[in-house]
Length: 327
Image (cartoon, rainbow, N blue to C red; front, side):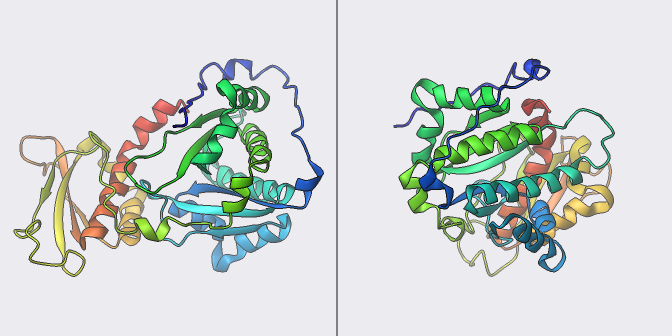
C-alpha cells in the first residue's frame, strides 16, 4: 500500500521575500513532442466562465495555447464533490500555457474587487492516478519536498477516498500565488511525463463520471443540522425514488443561511438548477423545533435531493474550510 504523504505548507510563506533559485525541470528530447494531459477540478460556475458565451472563451484559450481543453458535462462530477473535471492535453509547453490562461481568468474574476498589492493565494486541485502519486512523493518524500522548495507552493496529496470503490485517482492540492502554482504544476507534469502508466492511461478524461452519477454523496458530518424525510413512504420501497417527488427538510444555522441564499438568491438558484431539486427556505424566526436552525426543504427525485444536500453542505462549510486552509 502506498504511503500517504501530506506535505506541510506551514512556514512556507516566511520565505516569500527571499529570491527563489529556480531549477529548470528536465526536458528529455523524447518528451518534447509527446502529448500529455493534466486534469483538475472546477466548480460549475468556474466551468461556465472558462467555456464562455457560446464557447468563445474555451475556443480562444485553445487557439492561443495550442492545447485541447475538455470539460466533463454539467452533471458529471468528480466522486465525492460537486465539481466538474477539466482535462488539458497537448505538448507540455502548450498544456502549461492553457492552464496559465485558465487560472489567470479565474483569479481575475475571484479577486476583481481585491485592492491589495500582495499576490493572492488560491488552491488548485489536480487529479492524479494513485499509481502515479508515488513518483511525485519520491523516496522518503524527497521529490515533493524539492518541488515545494523550488516552487514555494504548498503541495498536499490527499489519501485515496475509500468511499468510492473503483476510484483510482487522488487529489493533489497546490496552494500558492499563480506563479508558485504554475511552477509546481510544471514540475509535477514533467515528473508525470516520465511515468509510462500515466501516459498510457491519460486519454480517458472522465472514466468515473458515469459510474458515480446518482450516488448519494451525503452531507459531511457536523456541517448541517438535522435531516427529516417528509414522505411517509420515503424508505419503504413502494415507489421508485427517481420517478416520484421526495421531500427532505434539513437544518442550517441561522447565521449561515446567507451562504446558501447568496447575493440576491443566486446561490440557491444555482443549487436548484444544477441539482434539479426545488428548494424552500423558511422565513426568519421559523426554526426547527428546539434549535436556531432555519428549515431548508428540498423536494424532487432522490438523486436531485442528494446533489442539493451536498451542494448546500459545501456552501455552509466554505467559511470553516477557508480558515483551515489559511487563506
